[in-house]
Length: 195
Ligand code: UP5
Ligand code: MG
Image (cartoon, rainbow, N blue to C red):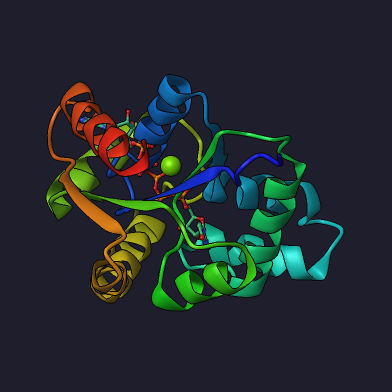
C-alpha cells in the first residue's frame, strides 16, 4: 500500500513570536521536515537579485518588510515540498500570511492538518526583534522594516485566524512565555490533533 501523505503543520504568528524556534523543535521532536518560507524567499532573493528583475523587485519588497507576491511564494513552497523525500510530516514556518495565501495553498497543495498561532504581545515582539537585530544581519531587521512587518501582521492576522477557526484547524497558544513552556503546549496539541 502507498504511504499516507505527510502530515502538514503550519506555524503562524507575528515577527519574533518564535515561529522559527518552535518549528525547529517540532521538526526535531517528531522527525518532521522543516520548511521556513521566509528563509526560502531570502535565499532565493540573495542568489538572484543581481541577475533577475523579478527577484531584484522581490528583494526590495522583503527588505522593506512587505509580502512577496503570492504566486511566487506558493511556487517556491511547492518546489521545496516536492524535493522532500517521503516524510512523516512537514512543518511550515511563517505561512500563510493572509486569507488569500491560505486559499491558494489549499487549492494548489493541500489542506493543513493543523495550524498553530503563536500569540504574543506587540511590545514583546518588538523587544525580541531588537535584541536579535543586534546579533544577526537579517536584511529586514531594521527599524522601518520591523514596523512594516508588525503592521502587516496586525492587519492580516485577525481574518486569517478567523478563517482557520471556522474550519476547526487552528490552535492559538500564548507565545509570551519561555520557549520550553510554549513547546510543551505545542507538543500536547500535536499529540492530540495528529496522532
Ligand atoms: N525567542 C523566540 N521564542 C522566545 C521566547 N519564548 N522567549 C524569549 N525569546 C524568544 O524568534 C525571534 C527571537 O526571539 C529570537 O532571537 C529568539 O531566540 C527569541 P524566532 O523564532 O526567530 O521568531 P520568528 O517568529 O521566526 O521571527 P521572524 O523574525 O523570523 O518572523 P517574520 O515573520 O518576520 O519572518 P519570516 O522569515 O517568516 O518572514 C520574513 C519576510 O519574508 C516577511 O516579512 C515577508 O517579507 C517575507 N514572506 C513573504 O512574503 N511571504 C511568506 O509567506 C513568508 C515570508
Ligand atoms: Mg523566523
